[in-house]
Amino acid sequence: MTHWLLVGIVALSASMGDALQTLGMKLHGEIHDFRPRALMGVAARLVRSWHLGLSLVLLGVSFAAFLLLLSVVDLSFAVPATAIEYLSTTLLARYLLGEKVNWQRWAGAGLVACGVVLLAL
Amino acid sequence: MSVGRLRLKTRILAVTVVVANVAGNFFLSLGLRHRGTVGLGSGAAWWETLANPWVFLGISALIVWMLSRLALLSWADLSWVVPITASGYALTALVGRMFLGEQISAARWCGILLITLGVLLVRSTAIRTTRGRHSGGTS
Image (cartoon, rainbow over all chains, first blue to last red; front, side, top):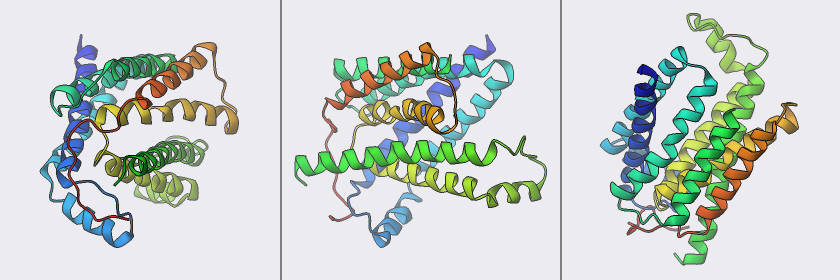
């Protein structure tokens, strides 16, 4: 039972981290200037974003939970099980970020998740 | 920015994200594969590992991966970016076969096929479905 709880923590915290990162970047605004000086300015603004700070904490939690998961199950179980993350991220993108997720995106995310499962076997 | 130009810029950045991720993992694997277990307690062992040119190259590529992904997320949908950049999994398997001599089983070939189909499906959808916010100048 513990390992399914860990799978849930890995997937949910990674998805939440990704969603917050996206929110932080959308609030910052589009980056179209890739000259070093402009990128330094972007970095200076981003380090003050609490969305990005919290997203890094959540991605850290996900990584720590994944390491814990690896201590109780094999890699061949851990990687396929956490592929559910592709669907939980799409769910959060739809309901938290308000993205329009059509059937192609749902099917695409599902196919990618199944593909990752097969790659890990 | 015109839709065509944004689409081209998105494609270039998406390819950068995928290639930097695959290159990062490949170089790290190359640098670490003959080292055995890295001694976590030994500072000297860590410095020695980081001084390895392949490891250094791998970490640099992963920094490029992280930054280019952030830039991509500044305008593209998360539900577009995540499946598209998952093509890195399939590419990593192919690079492992071509350059590291790793075997790809029938199940793994099926996985590569499913990921490719998923990427093609998502690629046919709009890059952004939410309202964008402009900043950072133009170039």
